[in-house]
Length: 278
Image (cartoon, rainbow, N blue to C red):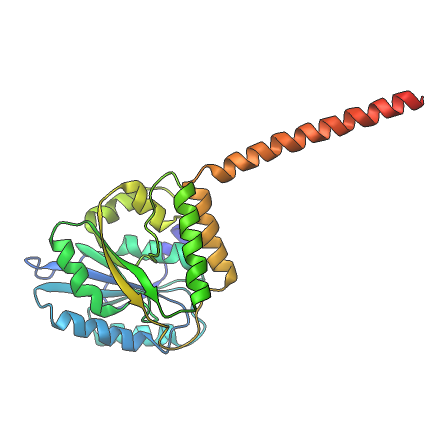
Protein backbone atom coordinates (compact mmCIF):
# COMPACT_ATOMS: atom_id res chain seq x y z
CA UNK A 1 0.00 0.00 0.00
CA UNK A 2 2.98 2.36 -0.27
CA UNK A 3 1.58 3.78 -3.48
CA UNK A 4 -1.66 4.72 -1.81
CA UNK A 5 0.13 6.45 1.05
CA UNK A 6 1.22 9.32 -1.17
CA UNK A 7 -2.01 10.67 -2.69
CA UNK A 8 -2.85 14.34 -2.94
CA UNK A 9 -4.36 15.77 0.22
CA UNK A 10 -6.20 18.99 0.88
CA UNK A 11 -6.88 20.85 4.08
CA UNK A 12 -4.74 20.41 7.20
CA UNK A 13 -2.12 17.70 7.19
CA UNK A 14 -3.03 14.28 8.51
CA UNK A 15 -0.27 14.60 11.09
CA UNK A 16 -1.47 15.55 14.55
CA UNK A 17 -2.27 19.24 14.65
CA UNK A 18 -2.63 19.77 18.36
CA UNK A 19 -5.86 21.25 19.67
CA UNK A 20 -7.52 20.91 23.01
CA UNK A 21 -6.53 17.40 24.07
CA UNK A 22 -8.65 17.67 27.20
CA UNK A 23 -11.38 16.45 24.88
CA UNK A 24 -11.38 13.12 23.09
CA UNK A 25 -11.14 13.26 19.33
CA UNK A 26 -13.46 11.24 17.10
CA UNK A 27 -12.60 10.65 13.48
CA UNK A 28 -15.46 9.96 11.07
CA UNK A 29 -14.03 8.12 8.06
CA UNK A 30 -16.00 8.06 4.80
CA UNK A 31 -14.83 6.30 1.61
CA UNK A 32 -16.16 7.79 -1.62
CA UNK A 33 -16.36 6.86 -5.27
CA UNK A 34 -18.57 8.92 -7.60
CA UNK A 35 -20.65 10.34 -4.74
CA UNK A 36 -21.00 13.95 -5.89
CA UNK A 37 -24.71 13.92 -5.04
CA UNK A 38 -24.18 12.87 -1.43
CA UNK A 39 -20.88 14.09 0.03
CA UNK A 40 -21.85 17.66 0.92
CA UNK A 41 -25.13 16.60 2.47
CA UNK A 42 -23.34 13.89 4.46
CA UNK A 43 -20.76 16.41 5.64
CA UNK A 44 -23.57 18.68 6.87
CA UNK A 45 -25.30 15.78 8.62
CA UNK A 46 -22.13 14.79 10.51
CA UNK A 47 -21.46 18.43 11.40
CA UNK A 48 -24.95 18.69 12.91
CA UNK A 49 -24.35 15.55 14.98
CA UNK A 50 -21.17 16.92 16.53
CA UNK A 51 -22.75 20.31 17.13
CA UNK A 52 -24.73 18.43 19.78
CA UNK A 53 -21.53 16.81 21.14
CA UNK A 54 -19.35 19.79 22.10
CA UNK A 55 -17.40 17.67 24.58
CA UNK A 56 -15.63 15.98 21.65
CA UNK A 57 -13.23 17.19 19.00
CA UNK A 58 -13.96 15.65 15.63
CA UNK A 59 -12.60 15.40 12.14
CA UNK A 60 -14.38 14.12 9.06
CA UNK A 61 -11.90 12.31 6.85
CA UNK A 62 -12.86 11.39 3.31
CA UNK A 63 -10.84 9.05 1.12
CA UNK A 64 -11.79 9.28 -2.54
CA UNK A 65 -11.02 6.29 -4.74
CA UNK A 66 -10.26 8.20 -7.98
CA UNK A 67 -13.84 9.30 -8.68
CA UNK A 68 -14.73 10.20 -12.24
CA UNK A 69 -17.33 12.81 -11.35
CA UNK A 70 -17.06 16.02 -9.27
CA UNK A 71 -16.63 14.26 -5.93
CA UNK A 72 -12.94 15.21 -5.54
CA UNK A 73 -13.65 18.87 -6.39
CA UNK A 74 -16.43 19.04 -3.80
CA UNK A 75 -14.20 17.46 -1.18
CA UNK A 76 -11.42 19.97 -1.89
CA UNK A 77 -13.91 22.78 -1.41
CA UNK A 78 -15.19 21.33 1.87
CA UNK A 79 -11.63 21.03 3.18
CA UNK A 80 -10.98 24.67 2.33
CA UNK A 81 -14.17 25.76 4.09
CA UNK A 82 -13.81 23.64 7.24
CA UNK A 83 -10.58 22.72 9.06
CA UNK A 84 -12.34 19.65 10.49
CA UNK A 85 -12.45 18.09 7.02
CA UNK A 86 -9.49 15.99 5.90
CA UNK A 87 -9.25 14.54 2.39
CA UNK A 88 -7.17 11.78 0.82
CA UNK A 89 -7.38 11.62 -2.98
CA UNK A 90 -6.15 8.29 -4.30
CA UNK A 91 -4.00 8.45 -7.41
CA UNK A 92 -5.98 5.51 -8.82
CA UNK A 93 -8.81 3.20 -7.82
CA UNK A 94 -7.43 0.82 -5.18
CA UNK A 95 -10.69 -1.07 -4.74
CA UNK A 96 -13.44 -1.12 -2.15
CA UNK A 97 -11.36 -3.12 0.35
CA UNK A 98 -7.87 -1.61 0.42
CA UNK A 99 -8.83 2.06 0.15
CA UNK A 100 -11.11 2.26 3.25
CA UNK A 101 -8.66 0.14 5.25
CA UNK A 102 -5.82 2.52 4.44
CA UNK A 103 -7.95 5.47 5.57
CA UNK A 104 -8.79 3.67 8.79
CA UNK A 105 -5.08 3.45 9.58
CA UNK A 106 -4.59 7.14 8.77
CA UNK A 107 -7.30 8.28 11.20
CA UNK A 108 -6.04 10.23 14.23
CA UNK A 109 -9.03 9.96 16.53
CA UNK A 110 -9.21 8.27 19.90
CA UNK A 111 -12.22 6.58 18.34
CA UNK A 112 -12.91 6.09 14.62
CA UNK A 113 -16.38 5.89 13.10
CA UNK A 114 -16.70 4.37 9.62
CA UNK A 115 -19.58 5.83 7.65
CA UNK A 116 -20.55 5.25 4.02
CA UNK A 117 -21.36 8.23 1.81
CA UNK A 118 -24.76 7.02 0.57
CA UNK A 119 -26.69 7.49 3.87
CA UNK A 120 -27.30 3.75 4.24
CA UNK A 121 -25.24 4.17 7.43
CA UNK A 122 -27.34 6.69 9.41
CA UNK A 123 -25.12 9.48 10.86
CA UNK A 124 -27.72 9.92 13.64
CA UNK A 125 -26.41 6.70 15.21
CA UNK A 126 -23.00 8.23 15.98
CA UNK A 127 -23.99 9.51 19.48
CA UNK A 128 -25.15 6.02 20.43
CA UNK A 129 -21.87 4.54 19.20
CA UNK A 130 -19.95 7.04 21.32
CA UNK A 131 -22.12 6.32 24.36
CA UNK A 132 -21.24 2.62 24.38
CA UNK A 133 -17.61 3.36 23.52
CA UNK A 134 -17.45 5.49 26.67
CA UNK A 135 -18.86 2.54 28.60
CA UNK A 136 -15.67 0.67 27.74
CA UNK A 137 -16.40 -1.22 24.52
CA UNK A 138 -13.50 -1.12 22.07
CA UNK A 139 -15.78 -1.97 19.14
CA UNK A 140 -19.36 -0.80 18.62
CA UNK A 141 -21.10 -2.15 15.51
CA UNK A 142 -24.25 -1.29 13.63
CA UNK A 143 -26.03 -4.52 12.68
CA UNK A 144 -28.61 -4.59 9.88
CA UNK A 145 -31.54 -6.22 11.67
CA UNK A 146 -33.76 -5.10 8.79
CA UNK A 147 -33.16 -3.52 5.42
CA UNK A 148 -35.16 -1.57 2.86
CA UNK A 149 -33.25 -3.31 0.06
CA UNK A 150 -35.00 -6.07 -1.89
CA UNK A 151 -36.07 -9.08 0.16
CA UNK A 152 -34.20 -11.36 -2.27
CA UNK A 153 -30.89 -9.56 -1.72
CA UNK A 154 -31.32 -9.54 2.06
CA UNK A 155 -32.12 -13.27 2.02
CA UNK A 156 -29.03 -14.03 -0.10
CA UNK A 157 -26.88 -12.08 2.33
CA UNK A 158 -28.38 -14.03 5.24
CA UNK A 159 -27.62 -17.35 3.53
CA UNK A 160 -24.04 -16.24 2.90
CA UNK A 161 -23.50 -15.10 6.50
CA UNK A 162 -24.92 -18.36 7.87
CA UNK A 163 -22.67 -20.40 5.58
CA UNK A 164 -19.55 -18.43 6.53
CA UNK A 165 -20.48 -18.71 10.21
CA UNK A 166 -20.70 -22.50 9.97
CA UNK A 167 -17.42 -22.85 8.07
CA UNK A 168 -15.36 -20.15 9.75
CA UNK A 169 -12.69 -20.79 12.34
CA UNK A 170 -13.78 -17.65 14.24
CA UNK A 171 -17.23 -16.27 15.03
CA UNK A 172 -18.13 -13.54 12.54
CA UNK A 173 -20.89 -11.05 13.26
CA UNK A 174 -23.65 -11.32 10.68
CA UNK A 175 -25.12 -8.40 8.70
CA UNK A 176 -22.38 -5.90 9.43
CA UNK A 177 -20.78 -3.71 6.76
CA UNK A 178 -18.08 -2.10 8.90
CA UNK A 179 -20.41 0.68 10.07
CA UNK A 180 -19.45 1.33 13.67
CA UNK A 181 -16.90 2.82 16.04
CA UNK A 182 -13.41 1.45 16.70
CA UNK A 183 -11.18 2.42 19.60
CA UNK A 184 -7.63 3.65 19.00
CA UNK A 185 -6.31 0.42 20.53
CA UNK A 186 -8.08 -1.57 17.80
CA UNK A 187 -6.66 0.68 15.07
CA UNK A 188 -3.12 0.24 16.38
CA UNK A 189 -3.51 -3.55 16.38
CA UNK A 190 -4.80 -3.47 12.80
CA UNK A 191 -1.80 -1.34 11.85
CA UNK A 192 0.54 -4.16 12.93
CA UNK A 193 -1.24 -6.79 10.82
CA UNK A 194 0.57 -7.25 7.53
CA UNK A 195 -2.28 -8.20 5.21
CA UNK A 196 -2.18 -6.81 1.64
CA UNK A 197 -5.87 -7.56 1.09
CA UNK A 198 -7.57 -7.37 4.51
CA UNK A 199 -11.02 -8.71 5.31
CA UNK A 200 -12.08 -6.25 8.00
CA UNK A 201 -14.87 -8.24 9.63
CA UNK A 202 -12.63 -11.27 9.95
CA UNK A 203 -9.74 -9.27 11.38
CA UNK A 204 -12.01 -7.87 14.08
CA UNK A 205 -13.10 -11.38 14.97
CA UNK A 206 -9.47 -12.51 15.08
CA UNK A 207 -8.50 -9.67 17.43
CA UNK A 208 -11.17 -10.86 19.82
CA UNK A 209 -12.44 -7.69 21.48
CA UNK A 210 -16.02 -7.92 22.72
CA UNK A 211 -18.23 -5.71 20.58
CA UNK A 212 -21.46 -3.94 21.42
CA UNK A 213 -24.01 -4.47 18.65
CA UNK A 214 -26.73 -1.96 17.83
CA UNK A 215 -29.50 -3.22 15.50
CA UNK A 216 -30.90 -0.79 12.94
CA UNK A 217 -32.99 -0.77 9.79
CA UNK A 218 -30.81 0.04 6.83
CA UNK A 219 -32.42 2.61 4.52
CA UNK A 220 -32.06 2.72 0.77
CA UNK A 221 -29.29 4.73 -0.84
CA UNK A 222 -30.38 8.38 -0.79
CA UNK A 223 -29.08 9.45 -4.22
CA UNK A 224 -27.14 7.97 -7.09
CA UNK A 225 -26.43 4.36 -7.99
CA UNK A 226 -24.68 1.74 -5.90
CA UNK A 227 -21.02 1.16 -6.76
CA UNK A 228 -21.11 -2.46 -5.54
CA UNK A 229 -21.44 -4.55 -8.69
CA UNK A 230 -21.50 -8.34 -8.86
CA UNK A 231 -17.71 -8.56 -9.04
CA UNK A 232 -17.07 -6.49 -5.89
CA UNK A 233 -19.70 -8.41 -3.91
CA UNK A 234 -18.34 -11.75 -5.14
CA UNK A 235 -14.79 -10.68 -4.34
CA UNK A 236 -15.75 -9.71 -0.80
CA UNK A 237 -17.69 -12.94 -0.30
CA UNK A 238 -14.80 -15.11 -1.48
CA UNK A 239 -12.41 -13.14 0.71
CA UNK A 240 -14.52 -14.09 3.71
CA UNK A 241 -14.45 -17.76 2.75
CA UNK A 242 -10.74 -18.00 1.99
CA UNK A 243 -9.42 -15.88 4.86
CA UNK A 244 -11.34 -17.40 7.73
CA UNK A 245 -12.01 -21.03 6.98
CA UNK A 246 -9.76 -23.92 5.98
CA UNK A 247 -12.62 -25.65 4.12
CA UNK A 248 -11.76 -24.30 0.61
CA UNK A 249 -8.11 -25.30 1.08
CA UNK A 250 -9.08 -28.75 2.29
CA UNK A 251 -11.52 -29.24 -0.57
CA UNK A 252 -8.88 -28.15 -3.06
CA UNK A 253 -6.37 -30.57 -1.53
CA UNK A 254 -8.86 -33.45 -1.61
CA UNK A 255 -9.82 -32.61 -5.18
CA UNK A 256 -6.13 -32.63 -6.11
CA UNK A 257 -5.66 -36.09 -4.61
CA UNK A 258 -8.78 -37.43 -6.35
CA UNK A 259 -7.83 -36.00 -9.76
CA UNK A 260 -4.26 -37.22 -9.40
CA UNK A 261 -5.46 -40.72 -8.51
CA UNK A 262 -7.94 -40.73 -11.40
CA UNK A 263 -5.23 -39.59 -13.80
CA UNK A 264 -2.86 -42.36 -12.69
CA UNK A 265 -5.66 -44.95 -12.93
CA UNK A 266 -6.57 -43.92 -16.47
CA UNK A 267 -2.92 -43.84 -17.53
CA UNK A 268 -2.38 -47.38 -16.15
CA UNK A 269 -5.52 -48.65 -17.86
CA UNK A 270 -4.46 -47.20 -21.22
CA UNK A 271 -1.01 -48.76 -20.88
CA UNK A 272 -2.53 -52.19 -20.10
CA UNK A 273 -4.87 -52.01 -23.11
CA UNK A 274 -1.95 -51.05 -25.35
CA UNK A 275 0.13 -53.92 -23.97
CA UNK A 276 -2.67 -56.45 -24.59
CA UNK A 277 -3.05 -55.28 -28.19
CA UNK A 278 0.63 -55.66 -28.81
